[in-house]
Image: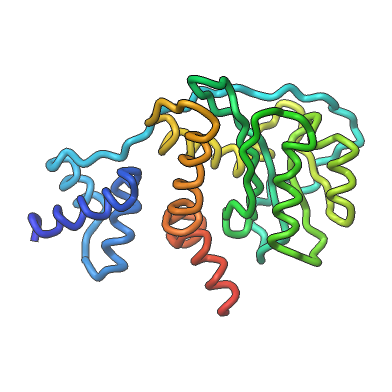
Length: 244
């Protein structure tokens, strides 16, 4: 059984872009009917030199522009809404390219499923460019819910354009010096770098876009299992909600 199981472990590991470690591989094997423990799977992985690959991301942070007492943290780290479109979160991260310097990944996550419901990659940090992501999210979800949307205090999220786009939503802001207030979206940006982008020497905007698209649309939302989602992918988790 050990040799046969090791072959299947290698297949799962390869299908996950060599990202999954023993915990996730164990869950998949158990779903497939294998009676195995995480400890045993870890042992087989070690014996066969199968490792979860990731590279620690290089982090650049944005400068907050307004810590006014009027910008309240409504969400209060309640990262587990009961249904889709009850709470979103949004943030920006920097991606370095060899030929063009930094490009900027703007993402919006639905906290129910941890699904990235919209993303854009921009060449500049101009407000209009960054907020195209929010326009896309609203167009995709077409929700009538009073969505809570969590962000930091950056200039994009305190701008007049942002206020216009979030009319009818409940704006919530992370507290000063509290990145954990927006931990889920920050964690996603760390994950895409650690698991995927940092493996590559990214040449330019086009190359960065292709890599983000491949990871997000071909893996993260559709395939990558998440402990928060009962070890389903975000798409599967939302579909289960709809069917129930």
